[in-house]
View 1 (cartoon, rainbow, N blue to C red):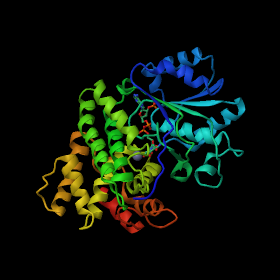
View 2: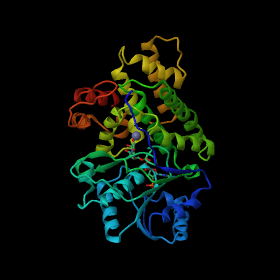
View 3: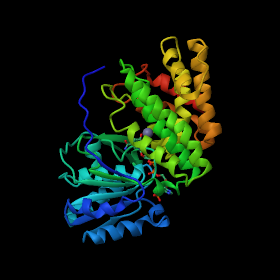
View 4: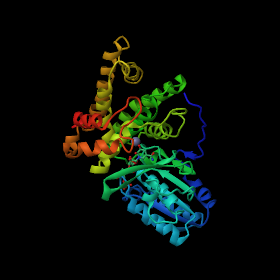
Length: 391
Ligand code: NZQ
Ligand code: ZN
């Protein structure tokens, strides 16, 4: 494994009686806050009123940016950044799921950019070393944005969806209250649970590099946590333990610890991001369809032992199988979990996606390098075949 530095500076308040700390935390950053949220779920669950009460307690001047879309648009980010500049905002507060937090991170950076288009920063045309402070109140366990250094923004006019990363793009303070996720519906709970698992598979578990056994075993524990608690949350949406385990698993899957010393290849994510860029589908659902087919496609003698290990340690596959049979059983067990237990549809055609854009999406997924390097290297032709397997 590579040498590494581990640092995670997000201060986390976890639990059901922590929101009263929001006023003191937000006040340390200044007087003017931009409150960013999505399509209204925070109002339906009564969280909006609690947030406003906390901000009033801190005597903050409140500005709002509602309406952040799932797969957030760069135009919405630009709107938020312009508001920050016009009003001299001191701190940006995200209340919502990954889309809202990602948009908030991009707003926080663009607010410090002399230009007005966040796409310049996301595409590397401009570099902004600094951003406004970020505070997050998470309402959906999935992306890990509450504790990671990235965000993903969509440019719908160009069918592009791109990540942005930066050490300062981490939330300064995050509030993780599992009760705020009781209202997440079955579909988003299932999709979010797959996303948590995908971060472990994609960024850490299936990696080309040498690994540290302690971390591999901890990755398996996070995966097992989701396998245990996602069905419990589906069965009983207000099961506090289930929601709490999923929430902390979401944060730990992507907060840097589990992939210490490992390059973040994220091959399945690169493939899925094309699907959500072109078709605006739910990210975790796209991953559920892509990951088993990706693993089936790359399965060979070299890949088999690791895929089998996943099956044995996470999905209860019989260790007596040969590597190849064990790996096939692992992929089958994964599909059973995603599609039977979590209830997600298994094919792109179920989402109304045909083969029209497979070639262009495959090319875009491979980016400027023209290939995806990681656990195994994929060319655009390989990615196109994976899309065909998913169709
Ligand atoms: O918009 P509202 O009304 O809030 O409704 C949302 C939205 O419709 C709803 N929701 C959220 N919390 C809820 C709730 N509904 C009821 N009760 C609650 N408590 O759920 C829907 C989906 O929300 P969204 O934020 O889009 O979901 P998620 O958290 O899965 O975020 C997905 C986005 O994050 C990106 C994805 O690509 C996608 O754009 N990712 C971000 C990453 C990161 N920051 O590092 C990594 C991931 O791999 C991922 O790419
Ligand atoms: Zn993801």
